[in-house]
Image (cartoon, helix red, strand yellow):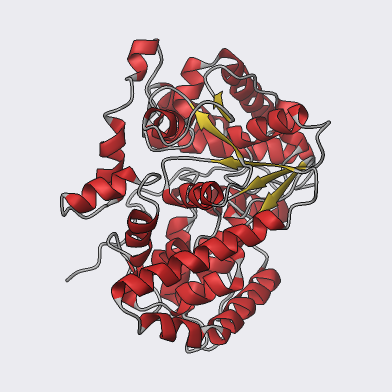
Length: 441
């Protein structure tokens, strides 16, 4: 069967116009990294992280083999116990008087944390951000999983946006930095300022998800080159890779793997240390500290060693959630009862039907209801955010780093509702905010 390569594996037929003008070589390279890969990679840190993963894989190989030998029910129980231990260990590490919040969505990782905390009677306030028509925003309450008591909803269509606030917290790598997560966290931290330290527990780096990703492309680990290409294809969040030669983007990454393939597959050596650790990982900032329970070594070690049939939409993880936490995962239970694979599209459809269409609220619909945040919809619905974006773009044009014609073309396409251009506008605003903070000199 022919492999369907992701977008941008191939160079565009028509060369993209030159993006920059009069940009020094050093800053040009940093801008290419930021726009083309949504991060500025650190190879030495990536090597250390790859070595750490390889050591964990070796350390817990026996545990994974033992679990794999169990009966189906015992296997699911063992996986549930591993996950519960990881979450509870994080919660029990909290200082006294600390307040802890969980950003909960329609996804699996955050709900797993919520289910474990509820089972243990651990005090855990929850929040979600989004707006009308976002499944992550409305569904947890409408599905009856959460009550509004102890749960805070941040509507991106109504909240205020501030450029100075974002320039102050550009150390946040989580979708760099134009994300309502910062506004939500700061507001909650402010309300908790008299109640001790503020923490957010986060579902980042959940084992079955991070180990599944490279397996989506069977040949991604065959060579270091294909592993790097795979990583490139998953880091083009701003849709700017088309403006650069593929060779230029590959040169961002090391030319050789960090470790022999038998210690850690090549795709895990590139995808996990760079994309997961350097682009996705939440970073403590200001008053907010993160708890990351799924960085537990025993949990990671199991999934790095798990057999291939542990992954996919009918994975052991999904089956475990449906069996051990049915109240928190009614969508999975529903699909298993219908003997349908619980693929993301079907899960979303299951709870999307419960939501009120945004048009009934007089709002522009998000491009994708399953997104945490739609740049275009927020721009159209929120005057404060529109001023935020317009001011940033005007400031960026005044810096003289980009060809005005390219920015104007992207902006025109964005205003017509083009989803690809919305990602590019987000990239341009991110560059402006990062430049204003002084991070790129």
